[in-house]
Image 1 (cartoon, rainbow, N blue to C red):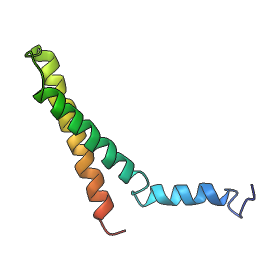
Image 2 (cartoon, rainbow, N blue to C red; image 1 turned 90 degrees about the horizontal axis):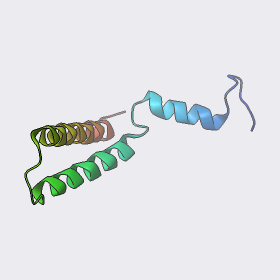
Image 3 (cartoon, rainbow, N blue to C red; image 1 turned 90 degrees about the vertical axis):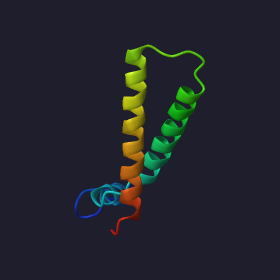
Length: 81
């Protein structure tokens, strides 16, 4: 690979520029957060038995984290660069 004056290849420079403005993986994070949220909501809604209290708390905490990641990544995507 050819290198520029800074010693980095152009490909590495572009990827570091994407992560510097904060939206490098925002789309992937939004997709992952949405998928995990839908899966957890489905799993919690379709349960045939009431889970133990510890499992239930863990599910709600994971759901809150997934929704927080989804909302945060959407804000990063729509915010002006």
